[in-house]
Amino acid sequence: MIWKILLYALTGYLALCAMVFIFQRKMLYLPDHSKLSKKSAMDEGLLHWPLFENFQGFVTQEEPIDSKGTVIVFHGNAGTAYHRSFYARALSIQNLRVILAEYPGYGGRAGQPREDVLVKDAVKTMRHAYKEYGKPLYIWGESLGCGVVAGAVNKIDIPIKAIVLFLPWDSLSNLAQTHYRFLPARWLVLDKFNNIDNLKGFKGNIAVILAGKDEVIPFHHGKKLYDSITANKKLWLFKDAKHNEMPVEAELHWWKEVITFISQ
Image (cartoon, rainbow, N blue to C red; front, side, top):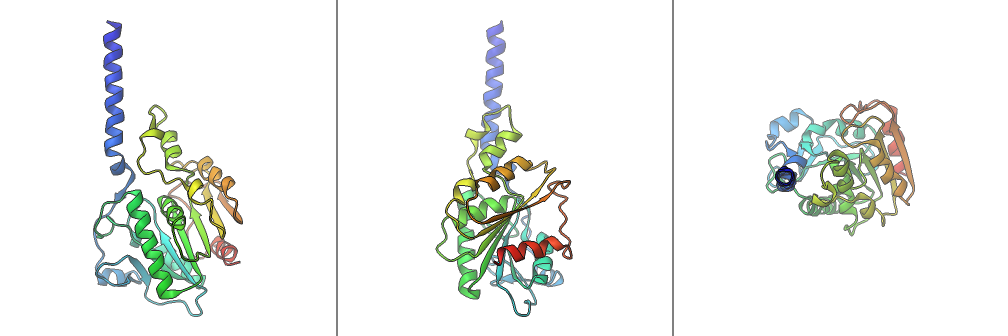
């Protein structure tokens, strides 16, 4: 009898592992598929970039006077790029031209999101921005976007001045194991997003911004990444902040601190 119980338990456990393996990308990527109209984008102060058809993201309608450079923002796993218009407001104040990059499969763009697809598309976006605007080019990643950024700069063949990692993890495999301790999650993950490995060769400044009470990407994952970075780096820690409660109001001083650091 005991062997039957154990067999049923093992069968159920293996079935659960199989379900997580099969549906993991639906759990990781949570896109809003709706495409923003030209009018709605303009109401937000944005324009589709480089064109409405086959767009790769959004830029602000008015560029800063005496721009210090271009920053491309790669957003987190949920929603769309236009939901991150607060970056456009805050970074424009710092005299940066802002591109809010959109992912394949998000915001009306064709494609299915997965690591290789997002990284390849990010490389394309970076090259396009560099060709159009030149140097200096800064790259900003948010959560999942940090993994996209790290993967892209590991492959890119154009000069990237500096990187900002906003709520990053060390590797998605390690993060998955933290959230699913009862499963062999580390070995089930298809999209690795190993930020530690991908950033080893980057030589520019790296700013890392963490939330002390992050319940989505626990602090120790971001700190492990920060400790592994050998390039010139600086850490901003919001001790009492949670993942979706970061202080992002455009007038806050930390924006200027970060831009000053990466501009060195």
